[in-house]
Amino acid sequence: MKNKGTKHVLQFGTRQISYCLHRAKRKRLRIVVTPELRVDVFAPNDAEDEQVRAAVRKKAPWIAKTLDKVESYHPLPTPRRYISGETLVYLGRQYRLKVENSSNQPAKLLGRFLCVWVEDKADTKAIKRAVETWYRKRARETLDRHVEKCHAIASCHGVPDPLLAIRAMRRRWGSCSPAGRITLNLRLVQAPVHCIEYVIMHELCHLKYHNHSKAFYSLLSRCQPDWRKRKGALDRFRLCS
Ligand SMILES: [Zn+2]
Image (cartoon, rainbow, N blue to C red; front, top):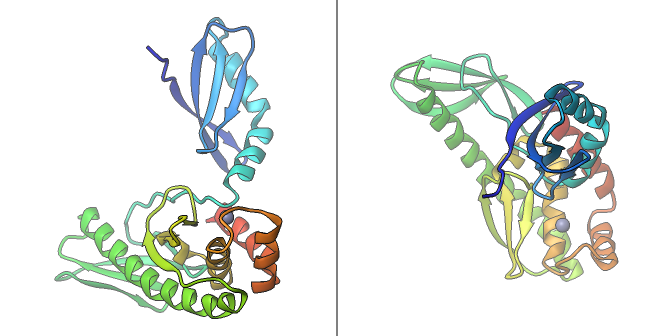
């Protein structure tokens, strides 16, 4: 049977890196970062736990850098607790969650607060539902509008009409299928508008080139000359959100 390994967490600065430790009949420690953003550590059967931890800690800068490289276009969701006072991000701005007892009503932005009304303030499931419904609605409106705006530019460069889907994705901001369907991450609505437009334009350009070839980047640069700046901002946003 295949050894599935044990889960561990490595603290690297403010960052927590999870890894899976596999014991095996081997001489040296090996660390692998997979395209799925999993960190696998293969350690000799006879290495002491503390020894392994120290070795992994020593490689932390490399692991973090490699994860960033793999992940530069792939966000991970932030777990939320759904309690009053918690910070939420929408279009690059921070809001506080405000939960109030009342009959259930749709969530609403009021000033710097996202207000949620539920019958029972301790019912985190109901709060989660209300917040998610709100995000979904905002995502649909915002992303639709910006896809239209970006496509108006891209269509001048021969990019066909997209089919759009919005859903929660674990590892990517967006994707494009060979059949011409663009899928955008629901969480994208948390990013600043110029970053949202970068992801959309990137995916729109994939409707013409289903790869990251020179031709693809040349098209992207024509459609959005400052895409590198936007991408940089998106990467930074992901790191601090
Ligand atoms: Zn791409």
